Length: 246
Image 1 (tube, rainbow, N blue to C red):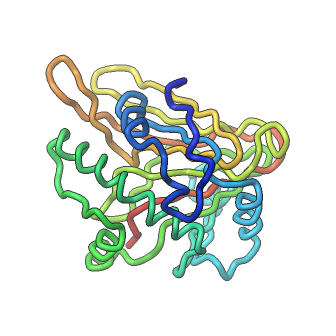
Image 2: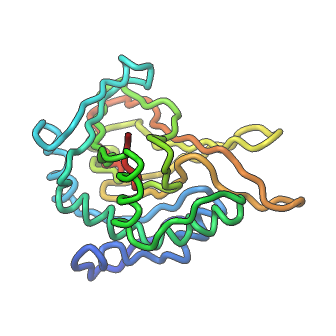
């Protein structure tokens, strides 16, 4: 995955500049590898501030203990509206370039619908269909915790790409806990991708399907993601899902 390692411009001021990634390269990496890694999107102070917010229950609408549901071990909390400014900025400003990729993917896979260019319009579509609960979340892992392979599907309207931001530093805050993607190809064995995240990094990846070019045309592969077992320390992650839940 060496082609997927790159950094945004250093002079990032505001949400638009912050996500001024090399979007053609993001699109190319998503097409080739099924994920794209962007280095250093969040500062250490921003990571620490988001992680500390986990202990402020008023910020969240619900808390999930994974072991109770067979999801793994660890826990996460879904933010309530209004989202924290930084989370809302990331969600709104990353959506437009991702919508362009999503529309191209859906056309290649022969799927409907198409996604509007602005996130507010897509969220209005979700809310009109009864999907009105925010889905950005904060995840917390301790020693021995892990997240089973899964897909984040919350209703009829699903945006096919999402993002995760690692808020802790591997090697100092925790050990283990690698972000893992699997790709289930038709009539073939599954492929695994381990993403080498550092604190403040962002990984963009499919929610459930992506198109792959084959010798007989484009076919659809099924994607799942998870986190391997934490061997030491504590790990926090910010997840940005662009559709809302029922």
